[in-house]
Image: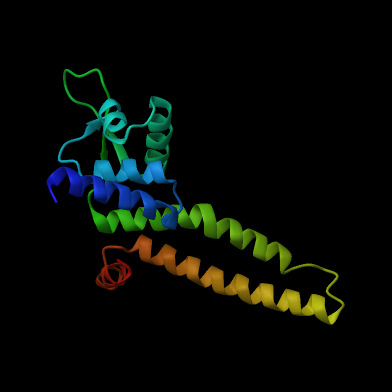
Amino acid sequence: MNFSEGKNKFIQTWGALGSQWGINKTMAQIHASLMVAAEPLSMEEIMQELQISRGNASMNLRALMDWGIVYKEYKQGERREFFTAEKDLDELAVKIARERSKREIKPALKVLKEVSTIEDANSSEAKHFVEQTKKLYDFVLRADNMIDKVTEHKDNWLTKLILKMMS
């Protein structure tokens, strides 16, 4: 396998994995392309490499910047914008964990809290429902608190160990 084939295979695979961590395929492919690029890439270079439209590239780059895992870079004498990805894998894992918590876990916690406090839990079925959803709320809250602690203290030795084990 030559370099071009290897790079393409990596970008395609990373794109397929994107749905596993809550982003679309194109967004993950752009991230992969930027992550392995030796130099920041322009939007035009990204569009050409991935064969995507300007609108698609723009929308997904904006989303990646919102996640905090892609940054704009300016080159002196250039009018075009350039983009680069977070290269520190520990920092990348922390940012993805924080974003997923914000987008997925916190909304689920809100719903679990709401449904576990229904007031007309008079029947045995309703009481069981409230009991189970309270247990789920407590469990998800503990998990979210653990994620918060890990991402707040990513520089301590225990967190580094946990992040390595998760990788």
